[in-house]
Length: 161
Ligand code: ADP
Image: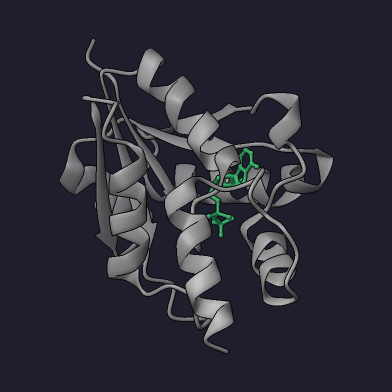
């Protein structure tokens, strides 16, 4: 059976933790669709086009990975894309409760869609996009935690004020 995984998230911005999950997924699944949520609830630091572009730049080495933006229900987007697995990254116990609820709700909405979890290498376990933004905003060095293209964009953003 051909397995296509959809990996949804905000990716504002993509971090080395997300990239670790994408690399693992690219080895496991036939196709991986990284689905960037427009997420109208919060104002993102990077708009949807920029988040997609940054992800495209860092995933060129993976021939079976594609990046899309989406603003509809995840289960509908998965169906349109022909995905049979929803992939999520799990960092620590703190992620578990929300992820468990999300997986349960998605199963109710679309019973044939399975949710699968991957954990990152331990050096990425504590990285979150929100913490990266906060550190960068306050002038801290985030070069260990994000790919170079993201680092450049963060520097440009926060140096301009
Ligand atoms: P969301 O806003 O939906 O949490 P994110 O962009 O933060 O989306 O993350 C997308 C997915 O990647 C989520 O499943 C999240 O748990 C996972 N993720 C985020 N950071 C990491 C990390 N450092 N290591 C592994 N998975 C991560």
